[in-house]
Length: 442
Ligand SMILES: [Fe+2]
Image 1 (cartoon, rainbow, N blue to C red):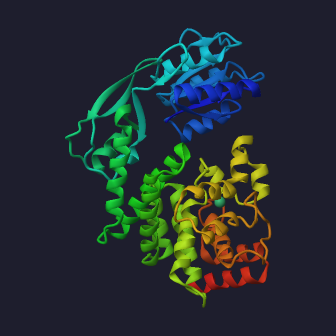
Image 2: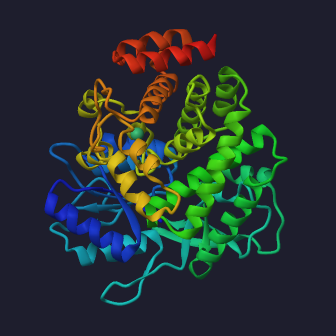
Image 3: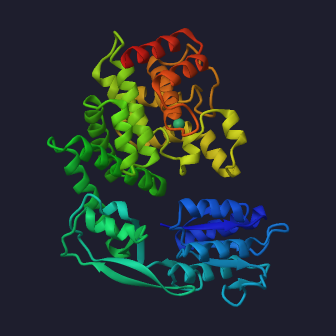
């Protein structure tokens, strides 16, 4: 799905615009408050297809600031302005305010290369974007693949780049990435066929016994990304259940035969593995370390905790959201109200998703809902209690350790992290778990 940033201060208009953009233009709408917020996001998500903004927010020349950024960074992102902006009105479409939602979706559709079928605005995109990572583990595709190129300031054209009979490898895809390409395009009639093909190829690869440690981690990381995207777009379906099962099994395998943490970190950082998967993999590894020191340990405990690690932050959309680990950090963050709500409820939301996963048993649901120390899955508990499930306690300690390890502003050596978490979790059973982790590192 394409992405659109919307800056609209009026809450009612924001809701109406977002709903209709999503329904009729098929674009995922992200809200931002001003130019700086938007530019910050465009730096991380340069593939955003369109920015729709009021000409001014308060006294800020919002449209002009964003326009200058897009131009200086040479982004393919289109811009649509609500209201008048004299400086750039010759180059960019300015819609006279107040603008109706019908007019807005018509213009947005044109900017994103989507055909609105009739005056009711039924959407008919001819091509759908898929991230380049969909091509990392396949060597051919079941259909022709296109790229989108800019024809004019607000016009796009789709050009065939990979034919259905072509054979390619990761280096070929890397060349496109090196040129700044973030997404390929698949003809809409083939999208289901294409994603099923990619998923089946990934499952077959993950189930192979002869994968190297490196290849296994990279393929699992890629599968994790594809599962996350699919769940966020459409929820669980049979394909993502199958792919997630194969991924979790593969992750458990690599965790059991993991290299030392320092070597693993070096590998994870030098291979552009997503922050979400770095967190997930290291979390499963720390759980494994702690569990292996417990007298009650059984292999299914590691499977349960790996399952929870795989899905615990699956509803979160940005790294910033995933890094938050306390109510104070949440309040002080720059996230929008909607993004804060997502963080606050993410444990509860993940459990709700599990209703459609046949393998999510009661243990998994319990640890998932308690993953931030609360029994209702809402918010973060400063000092998690003794009443939580023993597996939840292991998960919470492992999660705190990994969050510090991955935070560039916090200590990165084991011996500096352990005292921090010892202070953070004063209850006796948590202290014991942290000691077990300490022993594992000695
Ligand atoms: Fe979480």
